[in-house]
Image (cartoon, rainbow, N blue to C red; front, side, top):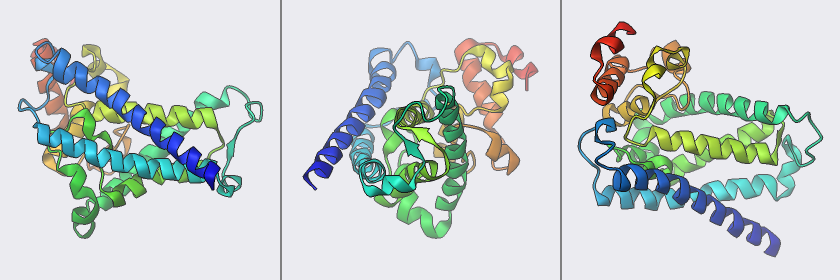
Length: 263
């Protein structure tokens, strides 16, 4: 029991540090250090208030407690024998490690999309998802700002991935970090995609900060996490998304004609 407690404290500390380092760095760069420089990148012109930041951080710390608990139960208790997690790096070819991370992101996106739509059910929304949507104008601090119930549901993706996908512990960690970095970008409140992204194939597949920001400001549509695929297949993407993305990019680059040609 003492060893399990030590594992929990260590995991919780790492999870909290990861939150403050990644989300904090994004916040410091865009909201403090280069606020004026990135003013044209801002999706919603108004700024969130300090009270919003404190609320987001408070709920995020609660979420890290939940995530740390799930991680410890999966890795440091007998439950690990029921998962496909492995410690021997030679158990699978080395190329499988990055592939498993990518597959985990695909699984997570599917899980998130359908879970997210469920949370928007009128009977569930106010009890579990309303806390996250209090951030109408989200900041990086909102990335983990969940009600306790939602944090349990969000964290359950680790269980799903561990049960269906063989993953080395390093790959699992990379998946968690990659997912959080993308999550911070989605809640950044600023669009940073390069100009040519709009003309590329990847624009049709990947989400942007504008995409998720619209979900927070409109409260419906754009339910995907990493990809646009499920939203487009299920016709839940907000009809004004591309127009809004072009507006922000025009605001940044001042090239309306070039952007409209790719619509």
